[in-house]
Length: 303
Image 1: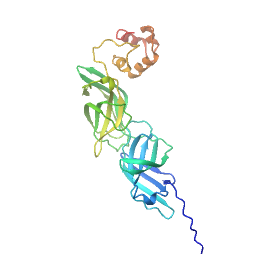
Image 2: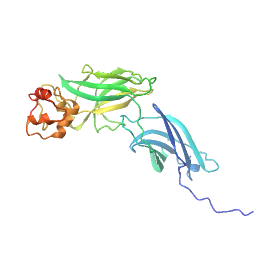
Image 3: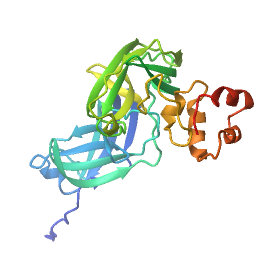
């Protein structure tokens, strides 16, 4: 019998077939197939699977260790692992990366598989407008609602509001900055909400040395088995102290305009988008403005 001595061609390690994901609160069930020449030497150069959101936020990581491919050279992976969902309610585009190297320094990307359908993670959220104002050195918040969109039987962990002055704009993952205050809210049942959290929920205002260089951020946090994690956030403008001079409709920030009684967040943004105004009377043409509201505002703002 003739034996073919031609060596088996080397194949780069890559995904074999479509991977699948199933989410459950702070865990993800992952199934994937791998094929290629590096599987047999995985013990010498460790490999891992990483789940990413928008190619920027690492959600989960699975070190693979030594793999045992079958007769066809296929290794099947099935695991349930901890998940770090990105904060916020936006849909995220997910991808699965096959990497090698060492934990903390995975320096080689072998293959990447992208999932076609964006994923929205169900978690407690801030809903509607969030307003802030300074009174006597205290930052007071007005929050329209906090909701828990999970299933009715899925009660949240303890929730907390935290105010931070961050070094960089927050994007849903890790962050660095100075904590300014916090308040505990308790748990919230699934499909339930808390409406109109009023200024009685105060956060003491302790501004950093350079407010203009920091990013004032309100975070909704939830206690998990190991620590608090961020579920949602709002970027806030640094509010002006109460009693400050009347704001200019042509120069003030949206936050400064919102500090005027009667100007909602939506109306303040519409005013800013409609600038400049030649006279205060032109405010009457802004969408959302009416004669009664204009009569209340015209003595509280400057051109």
